[in-house]
Length: 244
Image (cartoon, rainbow, N blue to C red; front, top):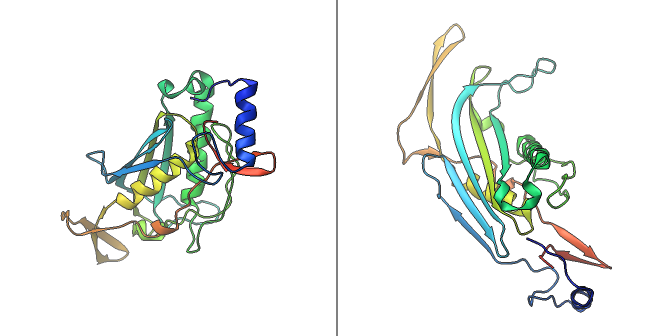
C-alpha cells in the first residue's frame, strides 16, 4: 500500500522521473512485473488471477448460464443477444481504502464501469478511455468487443448469460489495469457448451446443451476486449503508475 514519504525521497523520485530512471530501475513507460494465471478456479467456465509486483492481486471468474433474453421495451433491442453480468468486490483486507461505506461505492463504480465496457457490442475494436486510480472511474466510451449475438440461443427466448466476478484480494496500485487484464484473461479461458436448436414449427423451438467438454465454443470477440493502462502525470512526463 502506498505510504507517506519524506521531502528528500520525493525530490529523489521526481528528479529520477525527469531523467527517465525510476527508484526501482524502470523507465517511465515500464510496467511492474505482471503474472497472469488461467484456469485457477474450479466449477467455472473460465478464470484468471493477475498479480502485479507491489501487491495488487485480482481474481476473476466467468460462469456461463442459460437465461431469458432481455429485450428493451422501448427499442426492442436485445432480442437476439446474450448478456454479460459483472460484479467487482474489493476485499476489506486488501486496503484501508476498501473499508467502510466508501468500499460499497467503489465496488458499485467499478462494477458499472466493467458492465458498460463489456456490454457495449460492436464488431470494431474498443476505443480508448481513461480512469482514476482506486476512485471514481471516468465514464467509458466505446464497445466491449464481445459479440453478444453469438451468445443468443433462441432469439427472443433463451441466451447465454456470462457472469463475470472480480475479487480484489490485495491492492498496491494499477487496480483497474489488473481488473481488466484479469477479465480479458478469464474470458479467453472461458469455454461455452455447444447447443443444438430444433424447430418444432408454429414458432416453437427447443434446444439441447451438448455434454462434450472437448467440443465447446470460445467467446466471440474476445480479442477486441478493452484493457486499461493507468498513467500518472509528473511534471511534463507520463509514467505507468507505481508505488512511488
